[in-house]
Length: 115
Image (tube, rainbow, N blue to C red):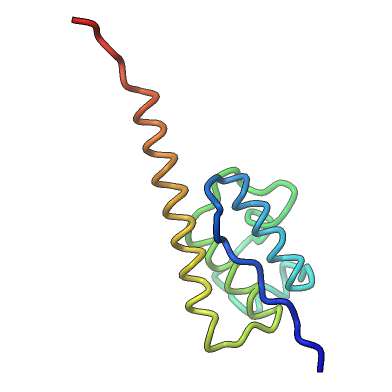
């Protein structure tokens, strides 16, 4: 029996661009399922193009991203017992990127005053 590669993980992802690239890898790993197939697995996904498509959102919502990840993992045959743990890793990456972005915005808004 040939073992399948494990699904891509968000390990090392630090920017939205990197997250988008890794989500595309996950979608490819799952066999690039169409929106209808993904929504059958996870109805709350909504419009999957917002996460995986060419016209995806620059900053995907956490909920939609995690629904898309869950749908791809299930479509790709990830062990159901492992899916929650894998989705949590993606949630951690999303939170980390959001936090880094917020910190960068605050730093950009700081005005230095010489005394």
